[in-house]
Image (cartoon, rainbow, N blue to C red; front, side):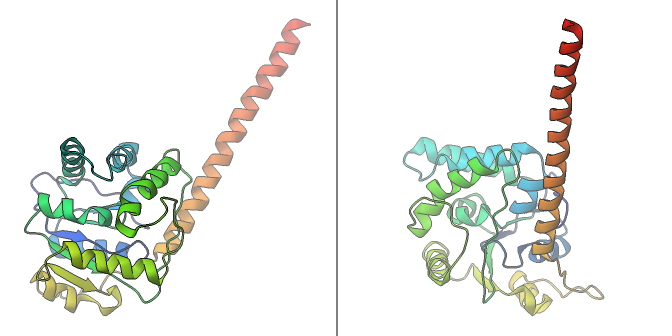
Length: 247
């Protein structure tokens, strides 16, 4: 995270499904894709935290229909993910990486690219109104289905979970469509995977996701405190006014 939420551009061709876990350079990867694909990218963390609340509320509804148990569930999930991604050139980070099979059905020509680092750690941030419910729906639905977890939110991605993620991708993605990419390797392997030329005179984006998340968290706390001060101040003023009125 660290950038602003992207806005869909009608008519944009969807080309890349980002299958990497959060905190694997997905923000830098998203910016690189925007440059190469010349279109907006749906970075889940940024869209859910900085975009309209309809993003998070829609994902909650989608996750509440997982595991998919009926044709109705499947239709609901596909139609809502289609609506969320329409007008974007790619999707990255959570919860998009949980819906690779569905995204491949919607966009059969898209490449599946999994970003990775040797150390993968999640830092879930839930300062907003809908985030607790979002994390619960993610953990109880598709997360538990993919990784065989207990259905409880997971804060840290260990080796076992990471291995299961790779195993899962190999199960659901044809090998000719699956690419593993480390953002530290820069333009060349990504451009090779997408059949693009290396941009001339443009450095590969280096976005500090952790710093962006920490900055966002501090700002949310600051705004929350200000709102509480206003609420408490209003209540105190009302109490004082009532007491004066009753004298």
